[in-house]
Image (cartoon, rainbow, N blue to C red; front, side):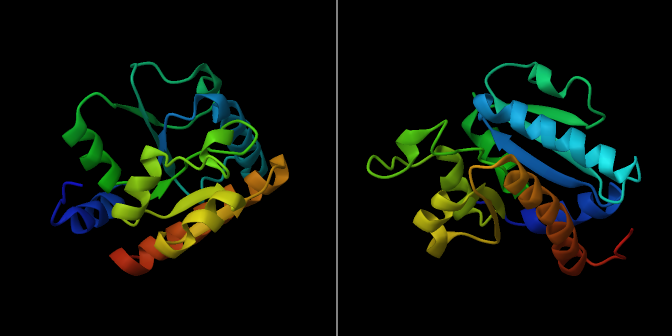
Length: 183
């Protein structure tokens, strides 16, 4: 992987200057966007628009339009094109959290007995990006991963992992980058 000296310091400056906005990155995962959009909608409704934790979705894909499932949600979305290797790697190195959205049900080839490696997990390992991932995927890669929040095959489990990640990762970045824990 290309290395980006100073990426962590640059990301800390961005975090502090953006009202502590978390950068949540998704690479592909088209089949699971509807699940994530539903969880985001539920989280926003439960927060009653209190915006205790700010975040943006950074979607790495090959086309320029965000998946339609996010159209009705008030979440900033940035589309990063996968076609340019260096820019893709630089963007990944600046992620606060990676959401692989890989499950045995939707992506059986990434689990035993086949067990092929997803490209975004290589970045999670190489750049030590915290992740939200299926518990079976974590079991495979656990020795190599940074912080992980896991879920199983249920919607409530995915939602709980998403909420725990928002709270936990914000606290980690506040401690790492300095600043006040808002909310």
